Length: 204
Length: 212
Image (cartoon, rainbow over all chains, first blue to last red; front, side):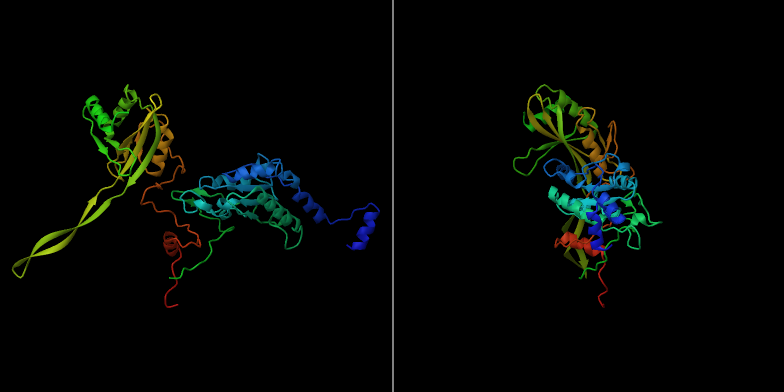
């Protein structure tokens, strides 16, 4: 739309705006996170939502206790192999459009527990993560920045055309395979549709 | 609290047939411990709990220890006939000490404010005979800790009211804290110079063929 025409219209009290912009503006400023924490990162997430850091300034203060009412999953903390199926199951029960933030070193890669027998080496083995917030744990400011990055991401999403996000494409999955607790490890150890191990060769 | 030798003597007087052994702890400041044979362990614990001078009424800590098979090599002189003359040769002889699993209990007295007395129990081996009596009927605080040992080491505590895995899931078959635990190969490359990590990386990513 012509910029002069838009300013002329707004002078007459008419706001002309693309539906996409309005839609994304509404969505990005009313993110409802799922209220669950897995470890110490959850404390920082709670601190970010409380009065001092006040996540509600960004429209994300309504931590919902049910996945049916949430559209943002903040994976805050260590994901043990025993917990991973439940995290994926919660994600599957959230309605589209939905987003995932991996908060802290553990949720990103397993963190200091990476070499352990019971910790998942990053939630992006099973879920499509939109924003990674590094830190151990990340400060509330970092959580807020992560949320703002997610808002930018939502703002840039197209509603039509080939660049539109996954949830607007027909036939794209909205839920992901829940791993099964096997005899030695989770089965499968990662979801190949979401994540693949990097190919490296070690020099002798 | 009395000395550990005194306690051992009094247990032996109170419970006939009990086999006790004092195991010294080499590091300074750490108490020696009493090893109990599993058949009499519950009776010994009951004696320690009820005895008026000891009153060890609180199990603060229950730990598992894995002792793998010990392989020691010794050089022994062997006589052999060479060309009709007897000659001495060095021969290497391998001695194998079978391993076992151990449960260690740290007992304190809340009433008399003393402790700890360290009790140990050992299983017959690491594969088949891994049963030990549970002390949970006497000490409620041992409940979860015995479950944890069962989960991570595989000691089966007879008489435990609810012996299920604690940290790993039902259907998990391994015991991750055992020395010979083989973890699933879901290694991811990490840029560390740590030798163990590097060895793991080499196992996971086989090196390119040397002829290129």
